[in-house]
Image 1 (tube, rainbow, N blue to C red):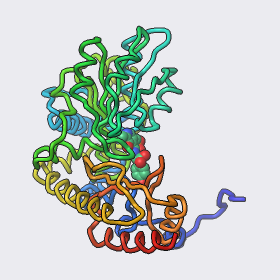
Image 2: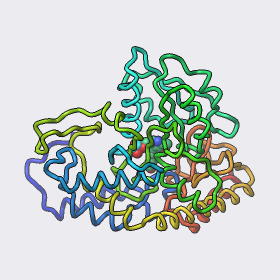
Image 3: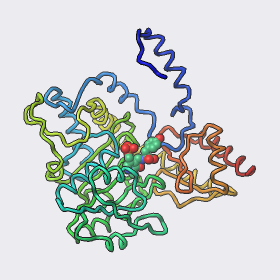
Length: 386
Ligand code: 0PR
C-alpha cells in the first residue's frame, strides 16, 4: 500500500529516489525512442518554462502579459496557416484541440442527432470527443494509398452532418488527405471542415518550401474552418502545448464560457481546461520567434531526408516491406512474424510503436542516422532469426 508520507524527506533524498525510479524511463537522448511524436524540448523553451511556470492562462486578468503573448502565438500559427486574423488557443494537446473543434461544430449546428464524418485513419481523440459531446462518428473508407476516400465521405453526408474531418499527417502513416477536395466538398454542402494537422502542421509548410510535393492543407482552402496544430510535436515545445486555430470568431464564440468573477472581469474560457499553463504558451511564442520559418525548415529538411533514406533501407531488407511511400517524416513498415519482431525489438530497448499491423518510425529531431543504423542492424538480425 502506498501511504501519504507522515514526515517529509529531504530534497536530496527525493531527488535521489526520483533519479533511481526514472531509470526505467526511455529518454530521447538515448536514441532509442523511434516511435514517438514528441521529442526533447528546445533548450530555450526549457528556460522559459522554469522562469514562468507560475503563469496561469485560466486567469488572464492576472497574467495580462502572458495572455497577450498567447494571442500573438495564435496569430503567428494562424499566419503560418495562411490566415490574416486567427481565433484560437494554445491548449493541452491535439486531443483537446480536436475536441474543441468538434464542440464548436456541434454547438453551431445545434441539431438533435449530430454526426461527424471522419477518415478511418483518424486519431482516437475523436472517440473521446464523440463520447463527451454525444456526437456520432461516421467513418469514411480509405483509398489504397491510405488517404481518405472523398467520394465515400460525400456519400455519408446527411441532414445530421455537423462537419467533416480531414487529416494532414495521419498518426500511423503520416498521410496527408486530399484536403483541397475535402474543402471543395465542404463548401458545396455548406459544412465546416476541420483539419487535424496535429503532427503535419509543423512539417508540411516547411516541407512544401523545401520543394516536397504535398497538397495544400490549411486556411488557403476556403472550406477549412479549423486546424489542429501541435507545438509539442514537431514544434519542439515541452508538453503540454497543442494548438487550435479557427477561421472565424463565431467558432470561438460557440465554445466560450463566461467566468465573470475572475480578475479580468469579462473573461471567457474557450478551452476544456480552466487553470492552464501560461509558460507553455510563452514557450510556443519564444520558439516561433527564435527559430523562425528558416529554423523550422532546417529541422524539417533533416527529418524528411532521413525518412527517405530510411525508407530506402527498409526497401532493401528481406522480410520487411514499406506500407507506403512516406509523405512526411513518418515511415511505417510491416515484417514477417510482426508480433515476434516487435517483441524482440522492444526487448532490445527500442521505443517503437506497432499498431494496425505495422511498425511506425517517426523521424523526430532527436532521431539521428546513427540511431537508425543501429536499429537496422538489430532489425536485420531479428528478421534472419524469425
Ligand atoms: N491528432 C493526430 C493526428 C495525432 O497523431 C495525435 C497524437 C493527436 C491528434 C492527439 O494529440 P495529443 O496526444 O497531443 O493529445 N498522436 C500521437 C500518437 O497517438 C501521440 C503520441 C505522442 C504518442 C508521443 C506517443 C508518443 O510517445 O501516436
